[in-house]
Image (tube, rainbow, N blue to C red; front, top):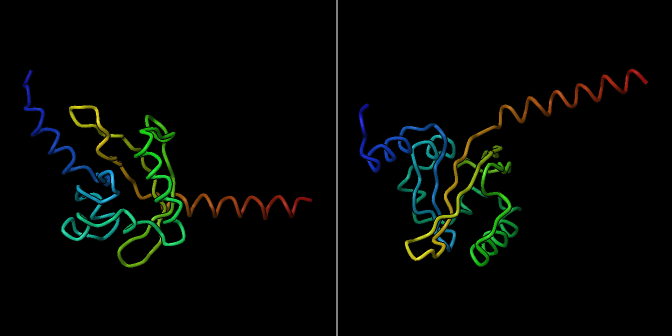
Length: 146
């Protein structure tokens, strides 16, 4: 069995996954942005790193997002860690609204001090559109049956 160096293997996995992998520090500033995030949101890593997470949050949701983020950073608690997925609207560089699902992991330094949040994100816009269309069709069908 071949043993691979952990750090190099981890870097390759993160670099090659089509999912967006983002890390934001305690202040909500993006510190890591992989190629998957570039493809989903349209921002190159050089454009996104150093910017606030608000970069991808639709304007009308920013206040709620910021409040929730601050609360998680203060308490170290979130209902969205583990296997639970969060589905939210997001925004691409070109202004297009998309739907994303993501899981998060709270990250800590060696002293167990919360340093920020990593998110693994996937664009589910097409699936969301199809589900919305099917729901509308079903509602129309049911209303005709009455």
